[in-house]
Length: 345
Length: 261
Image (tube, rainbow over all chains, first blue to last red; front, top):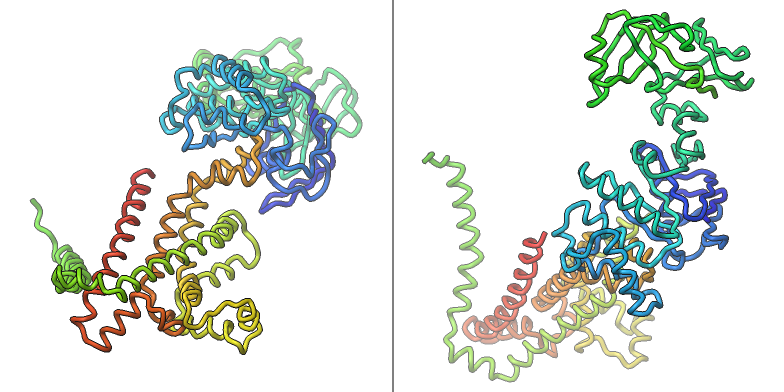
């Protein structure tokens, strides 16, 4: 559906290097990466809004690299909604229809369908200045989808919203994706959004794609140190491997399969590390005694650093288990994690 | 109530002095001629003709600035390129060049000694002592004011609005007329008024290029030189009234824009 081949862009202060990406028809694909990685530049290149130095962009098999934006069938929704401030909601939503040959009846049908799905019926006569953040984002979605684009590009559509509105727009996105044949390509910083909305995604860092795959694989099987760090694989160690075991500075870690010969790293998600004041039974896989060296609050969860020999393992616990286990700095504890939780690369 | 400090009274005194310095001569000018004098003055064909000529030439300069300046202002607002600062400085040059020099410089290329002047002459266009010459110098001095205002209007329109419009199927020109222009028209109108106001009061450049036909500032000068202050005042009042009219429209537009933002 979208096929990006060896795309190179050098635009203002942003550079994209040799981007290769395939996104399937009607897929909900997530593009993740830190600020300044080039995510928005890639979206705008697909939309034809910035010039491409080399490479090709194919949409539905057609090479659109040299086509102007208005002829690509690509809609875009920005974080700041970018509603036309001088037009009311109805005029905003139907703006694109005047550039498409469509009968008035068909236009009205599409308008009412989107207004129903996005619950915009009561807002049609309002100006954007009189809308909440969530309402503005729903209008922006309706405006982009009324022209039935092949692809909808979403540039962090939830990140500028209050938590309540975020939930509302996230549900709207799910609903719209289910009810349309459009391919959704969304940029996000938020891992929760990626897990909730998309099946596949890519991590882009410093203008290059580091990993493409299912969201589960990206979070649990990162292919590089950079991706592992980005997706929050906080237990990240250099290791040597022998059969189904890894040696991290003398500390033995069991794996559930032999590591590949070129692998050099071990990574374990902090939420996969269990922590207890009492010893775990040896059939729990990897167990080790240690001492709590730090407790850091993350709001609803706490990150516990446990010093086990030379190594520091990080575990995530809820406030309830923190209080019940009496976890605090200097306390002797035991950690455990399943061999299946140990990722090597 | 706390007593005001001396610095407060100093700033207030400076403000009052400046307001008086600007307003007193204008009030004196406007109130000096009697109503019959003003009426008689405007019935004088030379006076009415010069004021109409000033309005016509200043309006023409503003329209030319609008036609040629709008694309340039849009380009400057939307693009960064090597030499942009230089181009912006070139656009500002007419503001700092002494205005009689502007007239002399334009005559330099519009005269028969220059190839451009010869082409213009062969096309049957006369610059020296003509309305065309007046419009040319007024455009020269007024253009920077229009371009600055229009550019600032275009810069205030987020490029993302234009990008969204393009993604919805609108061409660049459709996007300009449906999105950019409706959001920037007030700045463009302010620019047209500032350009007209600057052009209507121009004297130095005009007198070099065309003493005749006489624009209002040239007529005021001629009457002052030939007949004295009292004789020139009614014409000056009419010119000030035209300028004040433009000024009030400008204030209404800018205040409304400030209120909206």
